[in-house]
Amino acid sequence: MSQKVRQRRPRLRLTPVDYKNLRLSVLERDNWQCQECGVMKNLEVHHITPRGRLGDDRDDNLITLCSECHGMRHRGLRLGFYRTCG
Image (cartoon, rainbow, N blue to C red; front, side, top):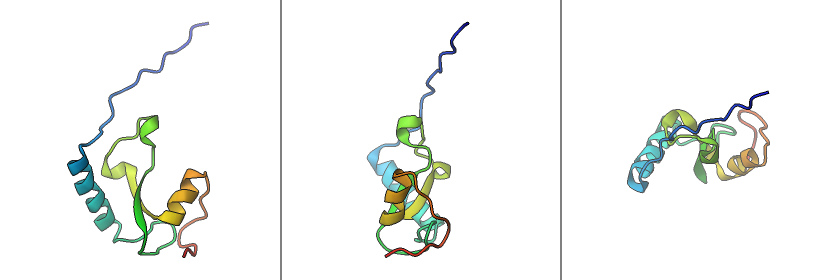
């Protein structure tokens, strides 16, 4: 039985200045609103596929979340659109 070796592809990782611009672009795209609960404060940009799992610094891999929803995502929880935070 042969084992398949998973080849790592190079991921897109931006410079700090380029990432800052992309982050602002994602916040604007998402109307400065958490895409889980709808709040408009304490916003962070989350990698849907983490960098550690070859997630790219691209707008289609980023989503705006409030700090509470962001923490819940990292703990493996997701309660659905427009739950109440804050």
